[in-house]
Length: 475
Image (cartoon, rainbow, N blue to C red; front, side, top):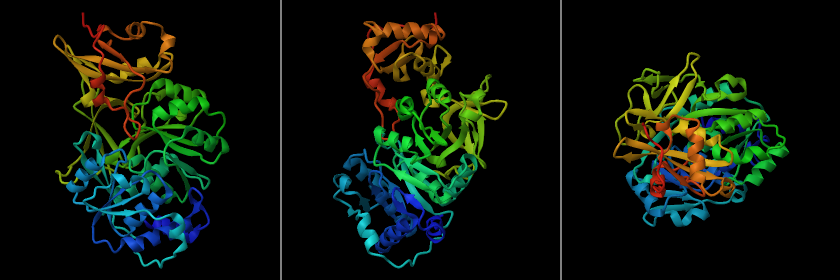
């Protein structure tokens, strides 16, 4: 898989690879860094950096010299990073200048050199670019911000299967230029890097999301593909006037139906996607504009992947299990996975083979013996005028066991008037059964999110407003 870069250098050296750098440039920089990294005795190393061409070069160079690379979340503290390094026996960290302060003093640190110096000092290519499918290319820790993380080994076999299947579903054009604003330390960013190298196409890497810069890239026609989370696209969509986009890969969290409808009305080419770190990003994908009768679905499995619904109820809703060559074999230092991978999500597959996600199993609310899916309530709230974001979580209740609690933020809270909670509750009551109406409604300026833009549901309970409770009744 590393040979994708070398192939580009041989057959289209002057084609743009990353930002303004060609395939020849990136190849030369990778060889330069790999020459220095090959002297390291470590089998595992870590990288902590914001998105940059330099970070991508160091990552590829480390992979070329057969290092298992732990990609660290830049939002972690030095103490949290030290804990992760210790558990994975990593003693060397490569880092950008900006992230120097997060590298623990107990390990060896290597700061990135500039692209200019890498390209100035040309090194001889003495490397074997053919990697073993079973080798670990990268390691990503999930749930890292909770302190209890699991280490996901991403092997070349998973990456190879993914990029091939993704190209089959999304297609390829020599003019493709994929915007990378989602972090490289996250599977959504890493998969853009690997897909682009496999396709021999360009990518535009931004350090972080900047709406004005992104809009400029869209309106100038510099990019025609991008991967976003719904929160970003919700703010971006109204401002897109003209474009040459052919793919907007949308995933990472639940996608509100009003956002889908707005994109359809504007004919934006959104592809819903469902996947996770353990499956190297997208496992299920759907081009929305070609499936207007399936707007609530996330699509069909990618080639080679299968979806199984386990322990379904009378409505066919059950646990979503995945199988295929993109699925990891097991977490590091834990029991291997035999057979299907249990996603811990709940959903169903319709008669045409389209998958529908209802909720995380842990988010399911069981109230008075009734199953309540937070997504149903959230979709209802998102249809209200002026809702910026919302989330529903279970709260313990002495009478019903659990009741739903809603956390919501508005674009302009003053526009609702004085009793905003009552307005929200009345709206939900007019749409849903009484027992689904949230007992607690908390109005916030913004919901807490992690570094990849996902709502941090576990931290919402600390913000719970239990005044003027109502709703959640089965009577």
